[in-house]
Image (cartoon, rainbow, N blue to C red; front, side, top):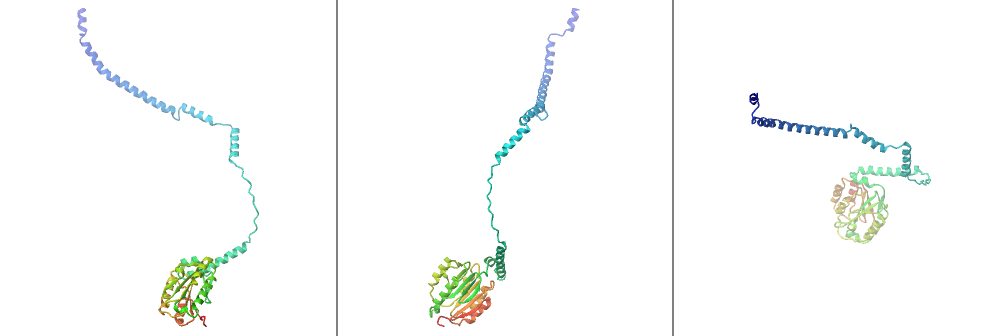
Length: 315
């Protein structure tokens, strides 16, 4: 028996080799299993946490219910709070004291306004035919009148082209011109405008001003002082004065043109060209001498104006 046992028992040196072989096989498997177990448990913890703090978890419903319980109040308390809020936000408004107003006579006022509007429309219709729609429509032409040497013109803007050549210095003609100019502008409506351009060798706008002057107290005072200082000298050339007058903005409603002598007949054609677009009436006046009657009549006829002869101071 002893001999048989000795034959079946492995030699001592063979046991360690088998144990080391198991360790080499089992140790990696154990480590992998432990790692997988840890990962699985972590995933389960994450899922559980999301479920607990999510909308479907009982804990979340408990938190929400507690928050809602804090906002609950009775209907009596709600009514009391509403009443207090209304008392606080509704300040007392003082009663307005109203006074009775007298009845307005609407019929009279409306008729006055309509008559004024009709006059403006008539002026506008005249302006539309003048070829200068924009400027004339805004100006209200035909709303007044002017008189110069007894010659009448209608409108609200008047240009005076007056001869102050050397021949005007005799027989009191210059003094008569000064009187006529002053009387004419002083007779204008206060809403009117005027422009005075004297001429001899060339154009000489009154005071060097090449724009409209209001027929106000201040404007009239300024013009009268300068008219009284006028001196007569030089030749007779009115064309430059016409050029200056046609450059006014807005355009004149009427032009008074006065001379006591002769000038180049070609001026009539030149003036007609300047006025072709605007058709401003030019009222021509020969003063003392009628030597320029033919050319003055042509200028008046071409423009739709009038011609008049006025005797000089010596008769």
